[in-house]
Image (cartoon, rainbow, N blue to C red):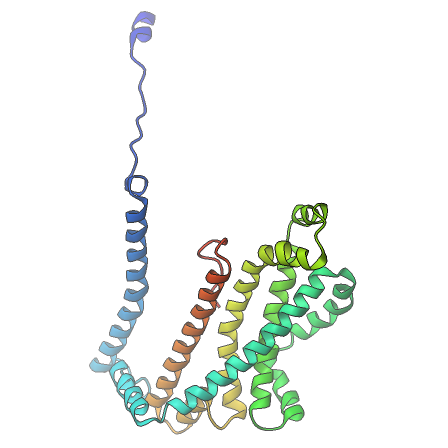
Amino acid sequence: MSALLTDRPESVLVRRPGPAELDPARAHRRRRTVELSLALAVPLALVLLWQLAAARGWIDDRVYPAPSTIAADGWDRAVAGELWPDVRATLGRVLSGYAIGTAAGYALGLLMGSLPLVRAALEPLLDALYVVPKLALLPVFLNMFGLGEGPQVALVAATVFFFVWISTMSAVLAVPAGHRDAGRVFGASPWQMFRHVLLPASLPEVLAGARIAAGVAVLVIVASEQIAATDGLGHLIFDSRALFENDVMFTGIVCVALLGVVFSELVRLLGRLLTPWSPRDSGRTRT
């Protein structure tokens, strides 16, 4: 028996390369095609189900108009030029507030991440302000700036500021000590330390926070326009709901969704251009 066991040939495990190893580029394209197909198929299926439910009378189309009705209303309003003033008003407020909030949050985040004494002095106050719902600040901004664009822009700027400040400060603090030590060994000046060490190491996380802030900025401005504005997509949604023009209301909602997606993706694209060394999916955190 022992001789038989000794003479038996040993089993050999043979592993053959799969398609992803034989042709990585083709496998990547196939995976991207599948992901894109799923990303389009799910919302399309929901829209078709909504259309079917409205056509069959499963839902009240006076309250939930069919997607075809919403699309027709949006097209008519766009062709007639009735939709674009509200889109421009909302977009202008978002861009202005986002630029101000991003610049202020990034500057202070860098300062607090680099200087411990500044962080110790300001972080408790900013933490307390961060937890305050930003819409609760709208009356304060109305008192400060009066009616008009000022309160809307200030509210967006305040909201964006906290997201960018937190992500920037955290990113600077997370830079490995070895990177800083290497800069000091080579005699880097404060500007060289920032330019060649802190900025490249922290920028991917900063841009991820900026992308989250882009989506939140759209949410805040729509809510603000429903309360204290006479134009904009938020005002359109709220006003049409009060007049029971639900097709117009859903047109505004669709415009807000498209605006948020486009704005967020533009920030992500900018992040990929500015940080080619970071992973391609950096900043894909959902809001």
